Image 1 (tube, helix red, strand yellow):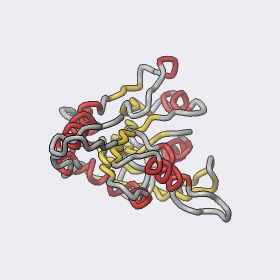
Image 2 (tube, helix red, strand yellow; image 1 turned 45 degrees about the vertical axis):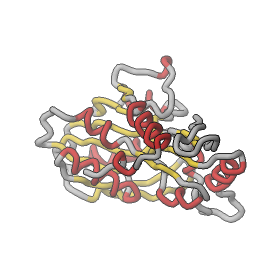
Image 3 (cartoon, rainbow, N blue to C red; image 1 turned 135 degrees about the horizontal axis):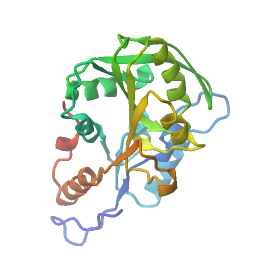
Image 4 (cartoon, helix red, strand yellow; image 1 turned 180 degrees about the horizontal axis):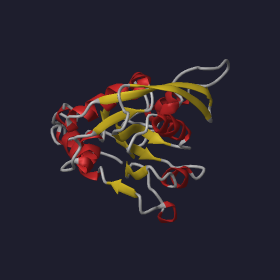
Length: 244
């Protein structure tokens, strides 16, 4: 997307890249020798192409901010995802982060709903293999809302479900911002009898042939539209950032 006219400076052209899902944000570190950091490369390419500012949602890790030499407005969908669960009886519910890296966002989400939070102790063995050794926090006999930034192959969530079943949780709702659902991930998740629903946003289109009655897609268009308006008019965008 572009934001081409700055009202206060006639004739000045400014380009704002609106990228709801920054796909290369997962490539943010050198975890093996001779591996590239594509998250930094794509940031440089955007700036070289003329971007003056970037608007995105739920980066995989905060350090991706530092890859850009232009301002980055980083929104999240915690407000929209929490709204889905508002009005329910959550007296026996706990929010679970699949790993400690996302626990801070899960805690912010839990505060919105007035819920406790727990997290999985995860170790990544390879790109498509993870091990969750335990759950840190009390989930036994509870209804669980699993919150993650994105779901790709669903490997982590399938491992997490195994650990949750060992704690005899009553039910599992899965919520994420970016629903990529590659390699049949959505089908595997909704086939689990204890998974009652999967919630994602529309930062990534979910084709109709991938949809399932257990899936609900929430629109984040209003949040992005308001951010675009504020950027265009030179107003503060920080009011849109999540402050429980």
